[in-house]
Length: 207
Image (cartoon, rainbow, N blue to C red):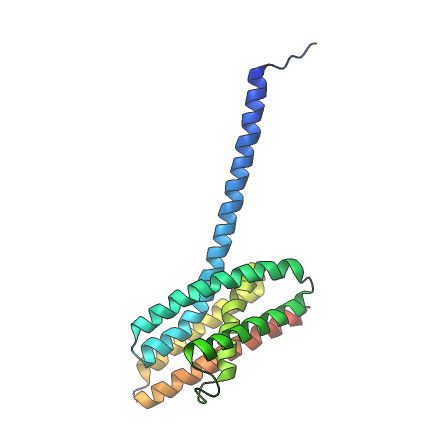
């Protein structure tokens, strides 16, 4: 039996491979876009809860809230790029998680100190541990979803839902403005510190 390869056959095979390569490229691009979008959204969601308490509930300043969301969006793009780089270079995951937490917690403190004015010398009343936890959680929460840690994802979702419910309850149930102010301040500090400690404890406990 003789086989012959015609120009039309070569054309069809070439078209098939080109089309397959193009579809694969589209798939990879869309997958990357979805991952980046999810990462940024989760970071923003994590930060937005506390930011809404500070900007809207305490200060009635919606413009400040919107400005914070815009800044945090740009910040999270940078966090994602650094995260992808670190994931390819640091293989020891427990050490990576600790380094990652310190890195972005400290980076957030630099933002607070030199861009916002919440340095220990500029605003002694600002809670440095609370701000560290806030910025660390903004990066750590989306990382847990990027690493596909299902039990931790479930815990984080439940934690945030309970936190949001308590924040709303405090806002609309506590009658005294002074008590509401104190409630939101300590809720943000303890809420983010609690989330940070819980994530690290649960993640490192499995290792």
